Length: 94
Image (cartoon, rainbow, N blue to C red; front, side, top):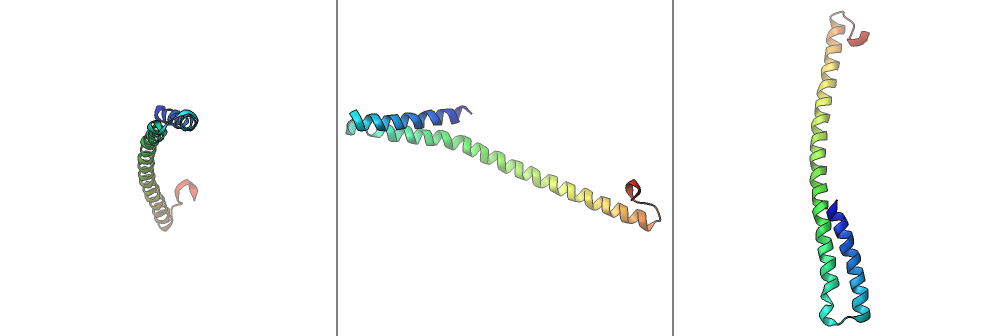
């Protein structure tokens, strides 16, 4: 979370540096706003990559859960059919 706040501060500082450079600066200080903006972009890249990694992990976990649920549903249906074929009611009286 700190990197997001740092990135925001760097982008605001970049905007202020552009304004101050236009008003009072020279060609020697023209690289300062660009450097601040690039640094802010780097601070945004780090949490974005962490969020991407978390999303991929969550999707993989969700896929495994879906597979498990499908297996349980198939087992339930199979057990229900076998119970009816043997003359017994299915689970929960179905």
